[in-house]
Image (tube, rainbow, N blue to C red; front, side):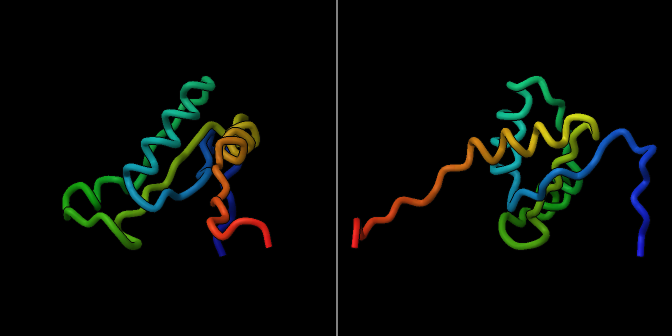
Length: 87
């Protein structure tokens, strides 16, 4: 088991399914003044893989802004529309 390094100023916030999703989330967070860094985005870019685990991108934010960043992403989430309508 790995211990969390509290001295690291950045924490992994979320993992996007691909670079397009990661770029969208990054733009939303940066517009709120929260810096975002990607990790592992190079694998998909080099290999050309656009789906699956190898296309995933980790978004890292400053530790002291992580709670705010999560709240922003939750506020931006669009719920799926029920196409069948009310029951």
